Length: 376
Image 1: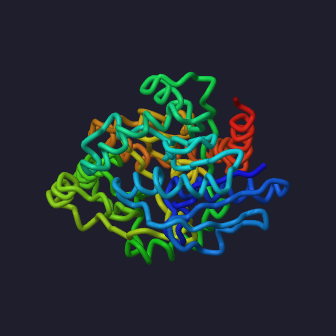
Image 2: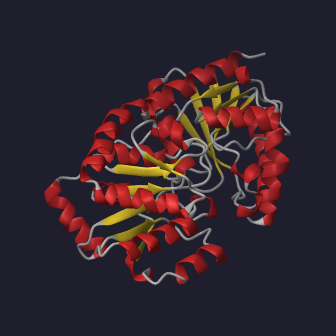
């Protein structure tokens, strides 16, 4: 079989959640199926590390698609001639975008529909593009893969897509995530928080990550304890908003909040594994990869009781109401004040981590690809 793949999110040192999904699943699929030919279509010069095996042929098709206008141009005008020339058995898009101007069988991985529920969290043109085109992509796709039961239900209810057309493939966590030896944790704390214990948040600093309520809850935590605990924020400020900034600027204990910026996986593993707990209280997630990364690092997790997060967390995390700063505050206090409770979460997380692996993702995605190619 010949399979063309949209790989425009495979960018060296800039892999995000969907980028890691693309990398980890395709790396396994291409090497495990040498009998098939894969065409990776990039929108910029590619890094050789993304050409995983001899059965991968890279193709660069400009322009770079990083804006709604360029999305339209790339997928509907520049991509169709490439697909016509390749004439593949399937076009796979791990980020959900499809070309509406090709007759090639197409399969989309739609990770979540946050833009349908929180329209104001994105720039106006981007929000309009998603809400206009993703219903069309969902209907165009011969098959859809998604990463949680929650997202499958959401796609079905929002777009009227039959359940039998949607496969759940889940996410995994990088193999580099593992517990940090006790003698190394002190060194990590010295590097990032001056030796102080800390809660950690990981993710893009986007409104739906709920930093506003996290800051408010952490401020209350500091006011009610005499601890030297810090809050370490790991991620890029690309989506930093006025509301988030106001919440941060209003903090009396703002000096206890530390921004590390984006970290590479090796450093992220050290930071996560040396923390008191991951505090991941988004109000919308299609999956929530940092939850599984924390489980692998032997770190306690505080996460939200909405959307996909309870599904991913199972019984191994403390669930809080992301819309209630008091609930988040109580979660911080519980994990901080009760070491036995925290240890129990860590033990449950150690068991839960085996449920979600990138190998399982790759196997389930390949099954979905085969169904798509066999569809008429």
